[in-house]
Image (tube, rainbow, N blue to C red):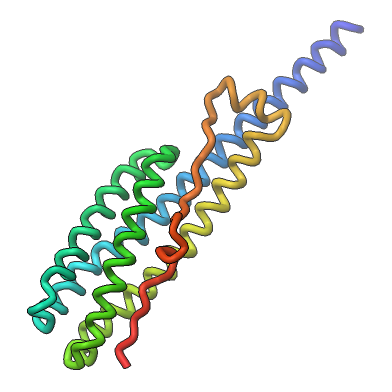
Length: 195
């Protein structure tokens, strides 16, 4: 009788351990999927920027430095996104991506500020449409980043609580990093105004 009770206890512990492992895997996959949503939105944002710059080029002939800074910042953000997308668990890559995206937001902000000085550019239908799409994409990026950070928090909480930590450690469930932009000024969406 004692052997049966012992086997039942062992079976319960094993099944409980398996359920913890499966929950950790599910949560890890959820935060990776949430990062994939950020990837989609940032890629969309990065794809809009060359069209925006090309539209502005015709009007802003004397603002070459600003246009080049936007393209450079965009290229760095694209590179940072590729590295982070390859391994969303890499905290350094996420930090690099956040920095690159912050620099891109700053460069776009300068571009839109300069665009204010060009009334024909502000009135250009293509520029207005691209600006609206970019603003919409910025909102989607913010929502995707929030969903990602929520998924990371759920995963990290699950891997750190007892008894899950007994499973997380031996099975190498590493902590996930939040996607944060350090500089509060860089968190602001570039303001677009063509009125």
